[in-house]
Image (cartoon, rainbow, N blue to C red; front, top):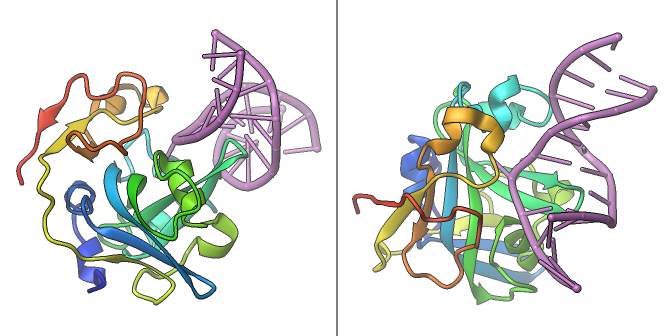
Length: 194
DNA sequence: ATGATGATGCGC
DNA sequence: CGCATCATCATG
């Protein structure tokens, strides 16, 4: 069963945790590609200095201010695409970055790391940015809560964000082999409620 | 540790 | 307009 808009219309950090174990599906011209989400990051509100929304509703970030349940896909470092799902209430900019998955079906590449995950599922900014996750091409399938405990840590590569970089808004399934490597990963990890 | 590679956002 | 920056990855 596909996750409905109400799933996304909640606090970013809650959505980021609840997305773990769910299955991201991309129907790519008749071919189905899917991965189980094992790592996410929350970007929460206009004051989050790590968020693309920190400059306000610019052309790129405006989508984060819009309705939840929409894909936000952008190109980073000229080489990698990253996919987010827009969350929260309209007008309050927030999104969850999908950082890693576990291959389920039709994956073209490693699913470890946000850029790799997009490449594996053939998700690209030109085709998928702004796509409604309530549609039939790109969506997330519901799944039972994961057996693995959920862990949290500071977000990756957002040192420019000052104190906001310390917030434990990166979530993952403990011990999962597909969780991305990153500097300082899981050092100050805290366990989160199930 | 570093380079590839291009969109983005800012400041002039 | 120019320029620095960047929610990455692969390689050595």
